[in-house]
Structure formats: structure tokens, C-alpha cells
Image 1 (spheres, rainbow, N blue to C red):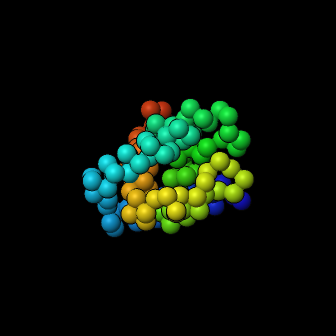
Image 2: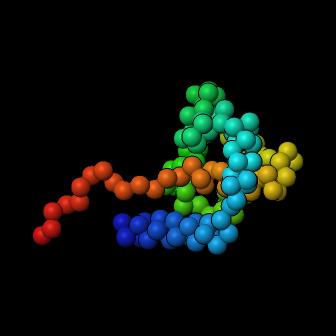
Length: 129
């Protein structure tokens, strides 16, 4: 895959994510509900900030996903909800569809999305030609 194809795919994923997020922004109540559920059920593996560095992460193989990475951030809400509901085969990520309602799964997703903070790079741009 060429560099421009990779950049295009990432940008397309981010645009899709931002587009879907802006269409129906989650309420502060939903994000708070998601935070409580995340802290109770997810933080032990994924870490308090979603970096995949929870207390149990060192004993898991493969390691838990970094939920704030560009790779995860580029996934659609539907892709992430599928993982929350069904888990990931051959990992410690179990299915939550029988333990969390659809609304609770959406709240966890809203909270995970709220963890992602896009900031400007601290590196100055290259000099103009």
C-alpha cells in the first residue's frame, strides 16, 4: 500500500468517525454512565486512560488494545460496538452483550471516544521552500 493510500485510509476513517460523532453527539449523562462502566469493567485491562496499560495488561497475551491510538480511533462506531458486544477471539477481551445492555455498550463507546484528544503537534512545521 502506498503512503498516500495509507494516509487516505486513515483520514477517511477519522472523517467517518468524526462525522458519525458529530451527527449525534453523546450527552454528558451518557458519557458519565460510560465512564462508570468503563472504570468498573474495562480499566483493569485497558487502563484508566484507555492506553492498554491496566493492572492486568502485563499478564495478558496479546496485550489489551490501546483505545486512544490512531488505529482504534479510525474504526467506526459500529466496528467498536461489535468488539464490545462480541469480544475478540483468542484474546482476553470477552463479549459484553450478555452483561451490558445496548444503551450501556453505547455509553462505554461514548466514554472511550471522549478519551481521544487531538492536539496540534509540538514540532514546528518544516521551513517553507
